[in-house]
Image 1: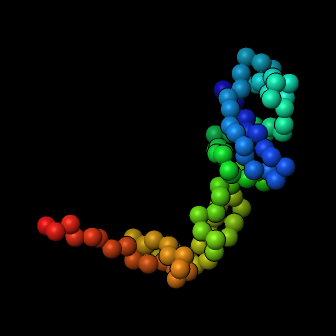
Image 2 (image 1 turned 60 degrees about the horizontal axis):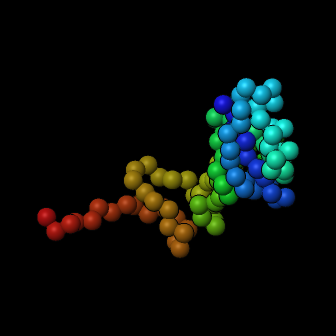
Length: 106
């Protein structure tokens, strides 16, 4: 089974579809002839979703989880390394904060 992603002019994924492995080109010609646009094959180790971006020759990356995070290859990284333990990112503080357990009244 082949998975294809349609890209817009900014390399953003518009849709993902399945191609036909019975065709020599895995359905690529059918997509071009019937839907048009620009299509790139998606592979299992770098699957794409709608709104993701294609980086030519490298693969797909997701939208940034936070404005302060930076792209490292195809992975978004916080500007500060995550400490050991149960922490979550706080975009207001631009830092990791210790996760707290809420008491449900027990």
